[in-house]
Length: 221
Image (cartoon, rainbow, N blue to C red; front, side):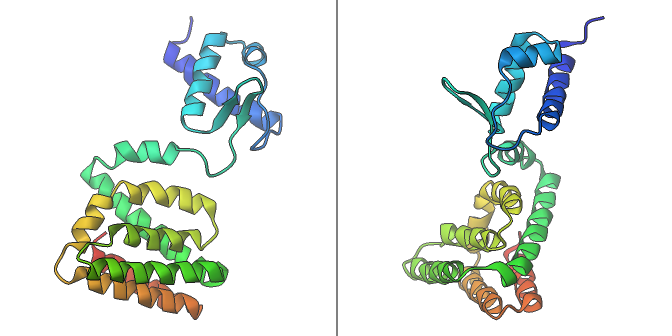
């Protein structure tokens, strides 16, 4: 009996992964041709083509005209972003996102105390200064707030953590704006950012984590 189209499609994706493993292919390496894949998988070229399109949509592979199809390097794929756009529509899922974000940021701050560069320390300080200027100018520093947390996660120098964190927060900027709009919250938030930065400068992991936990709790996300 012929397997349903959806089943064939999923099997091809799984078998493609096995081929990548068997051929010891790494990011940047070229995949076998569509014809060769069809022969090795004993599947129709149209089914193989659809599977490759799905992988390309997620930026897991890249097709270069006249050259072939290549495995994408780490950090380029959109899988987490695509899933997050659906995931965050559910209220319970939003709570899960809040919890997951906190877990990532707390561990990122611990690592940042050991790995942050002088340039990143300077960047965090500049973001805080820009936040105050924006606030004193009568606007909510939503983008600066986002950039502060993004830079914190970048400072742990773990690309996978950043790739997981980014879509969780980018899809919740509306909640961030609502948080900063609460009476007195913006100024307190900026002061909390300054306290986190100072603890990181001193490489005081426990105090940095304590300050971040307090900040996230006060921000209600």
